[in-house]
Length: 125
Image: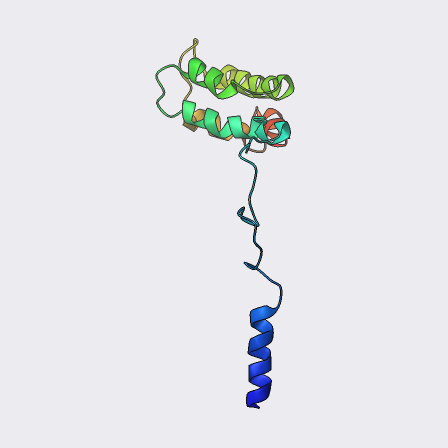
């Protein structure tokens, strides 16, 4: 039994494996350039929607806030977001005034006036 254990221990010491190379670079080194490929950096309408929701909770200038949320969207995603925001403002703004979250939230739910626009925005990829 001792001989078997000694043989296994010796085999583990001399067998090729991690840490036995003579190179000075780590085995799992990665290049310094960690940039993300374009399609992973794209900002979609669904992400802007969560940002836009915050615009209806006491923001001083809701239109500026919504425009900031839309910044960086692709033209297609931007159009979907603008359609949704436009629908909410048309349904909830009185005389061009602010929109409350209490008015906006039901408009994007099923059966609400802006449900189709919200669905298009949420499914945008």
